[in-house]
Length: 97
Image (cartoon, rainbow, N blue to C red):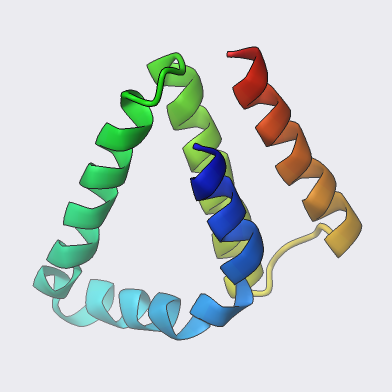
C-alpha cells in the first residue's frame, strides 16, 4: 500500500496523457479500458492481501485515486502542501491498520 501511495505522489502530473486516453476510451470504445481494469483488479487483490484491513486499504486506494485524478484534471482545490499532508496522513493510516 505504501508503494501505491508513493507512486501517486511521484507520478501525478506525468500521467496526464494516460488519463486523457482513459477519458477518450470511456467515451468511444470502452473495451480499450480492459487492460486498465485488469490492472486495477490486480492492484486491488494485492491491496486486499497486504496485511491491512481490506476495507481500510480500499478506502485509502480510493482516496489516492481521487488525489491523482484531481491533480491530472487540474480540479484540485488543494495546494501542494495540503496534498503532501493528505498523502502523509494516508500513510499514517496504513501504520494504524
